[in-house]
Amino acid sequence: MTVLLWIVASSLLGGTLSVFCAALFALNARAHWVNALVSYAIGALLGAVFLDILPEAIKLTTSGAALSGTILAGILLFFTLEKLLLWRHCHHDHCEVHEPHDVPQVHRRTGLMLVVGGGFHNFVDGVIIAAAFLTDVHLGVVTALAITAHEIPQEVGDFMILLHTGYSRAQALMLNMLASLATLAGGVLAYFALQSMQGVVPTLLGLAAASMIYIAVADLIPGLHQRTRLRDTLEQVLLIVAGVSSIFLVNLAVGA
Image (cartoon, rainbow, N blue to C red):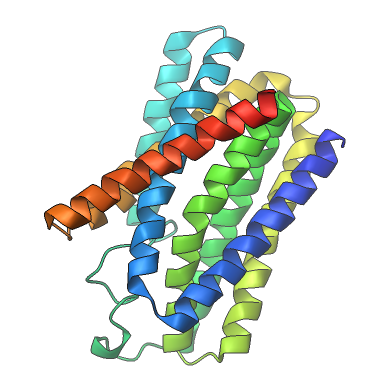
């Protein structure tokens, strides 16, 4: 396949898979499954960053200091975006997503705002996927896998909030699916824009690494600390290792 086809296929498959898996988990209301997915997603994100994205960015950049500065600036950027409620996920046990009956009713407009914010997030994911595939198909596959892994628990939260704000199951599924198409738009637009701007790719990879590190460390990991039993901790560690291992195995399979 051409690079563009890889980008289109990964964006469509990843978005569709994450939305349908999220709908399945949300409708079955199995909170334990979501907790397990969060742990796995942490491993997949960190594995993609430290086993693939950063090594490739270091190889492409002409300045290690500039790359480090980009990652630092990216982490601060995503912190700021989260504070502005543009990049906010809910993955912990004691929040409105997992306790829908204990939260006051909110207006349907809140659901629309959530979809808009999710679309922006997905658009950025598409840009990241395109930058990775333009660097190397193998890197693109790993990056798309990691992004899909962390999207599923986020989509579960979005789906539950939409249901709680008065949307039907069909409407919630349709809105989440529309928001997921922003990944495709971001990927295709970035493909054509970056064709003549290859010098920007290391910077985008640095920002991709920053976003994944921030999501894993600042957004997902704190939720794991809500469960302090030894059994829960061991399960979390094993699932994180499984996430990292899946990235490693993808490396072996794609590189073979």
